[in-house]
Length: 501
Image 1 (cartoon, rainbow, N blue to C red):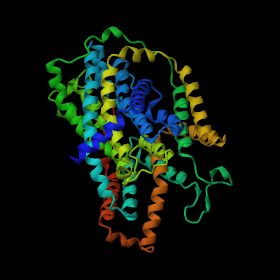
Image 2: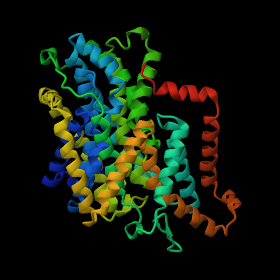
Image 3: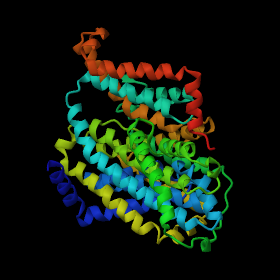
Image 4: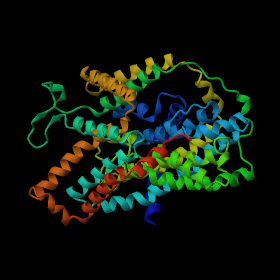
């Protein structure tokens, strides 16, 4: 009964003209950035963070959430039609989705992706509504030792679940932790890593760093790619619905992909990408005729598309309940909340019930908007692919610079954005993921704060952790994960999980 009351509150918040408008705008913009390669939700949200200053917290989070899960829908359209994944989580959809298009079954592939994403999104939202309040209530009993060990676990898990090399992931998290130390020390007010620059005394601005790493670096990365428009035979989209036999074929893959994606989305570093690859791999292993995969198997579209949308939405659980982002986009969401003066923590649900349940309700409404709008607009979305990138990158660059300057009306923020844009490009050249860096940057100050608090309470004795069984369990899991990395078999499985078969 209490859950029904909470959902009623959420829908009352959602069904206002302002929030409905921003939900629609976020869903459509998310679809657009998912379709256009080289943008992506992280870069888009980073560029839009300065604009959220003028919005309320509800409208801001509803819009940004719509961009994130809307991008999962959009990425599948280009993956199927032109074998060009708009989103990294849609890479695996290219394998069978584009083959279906070449066989004249593009309509069925698009319908499968849309229906699978819709079901997964609705199910994942139910998971958030039912599971998040329980987790938040349990987290209220956490002390500094428990929070320190939980954040440490999140960073270790992010290393293991990163798609690149483990050592590179460790290096990126370490660099993020060091960047988080820039500025005045909380206890002694000693300046750290400021190099005599007064502008760094308050630390690096998260929005400027994010716009550089995800916005400017995306421009530099895509400018070195060979351009050229791709043509699509729109006549290949004939039947935008499924037969009874096709519904039967996708039912179990959709369910398995949804469950797997919902689970992996909660894990730090997991989310949509890992879920889509893992779901595809499982379906191929369970299939009676695995040789069909890669040649137009409809299950090869249903499973990863369900998994990536479910993972995108359940990744909100650790953010809204513990204040810990599970991936780069959730780290940007932390920035959006802080811009509004809201600190993500377990008390968020009790202190901001309208915000939490309003976002939950917006996910149901947003998913309904996406499935109603996406299929009829396929022709328009495909036409946008012909837009040359040379027309897009000046606008992206201008938005990043204006957004950086508007943070404090200080040109120094533009220089920070540019420097981190170049750093992001160097990371791309070195095949280093930016996500661990951003997680380290946002979680580093929290890790330091909770470590210091726990040591003050324990009077400097680290063995006092034995009196905190929850913290001890988290630390044991950290140790176990680190030992797993040393196992050659685990390393092989980890590499295979991210390979395109």
